[in-house]
Length: 155
Image (cartoon, rainbow, N blue to C red):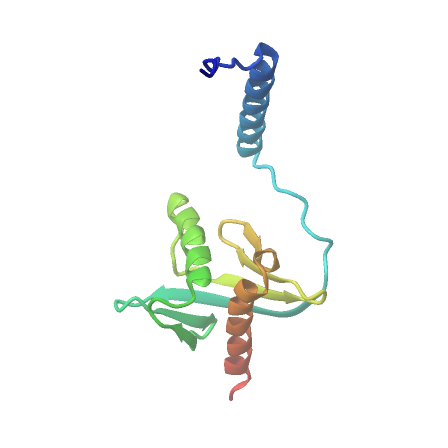
């Protein structure tokens, strides 16, 4: 007959250490949130292309993109497509609603000399470096930037 397996108890020191790590992590997150900590941004680079864009939700679920000023239609994102773009815009819109800022204010899409692509919300101060999400996701915004420069170049 096999001996009964004993219940093994974790050492008290390991439990205290793990609890300490969890508590320290929570404290650091709370301090970062309360002090509005922002990680260091990359060194400044020259602006290659910059465009102000307004995004409008259509009743059919599409998103119309307008270059401002002038409200020239740049592109329309069909319903169910461009999920990364939609997700980024939802996050920025949530911040605007929390600050009671109009959706009519444009966002600023910028291509930098070092190849980076960023999206800024001048009305809230939010800055998103799009290249950190990978080439496919940042490429969706690069396509919008290309379309907007082609619209601006038309007579």
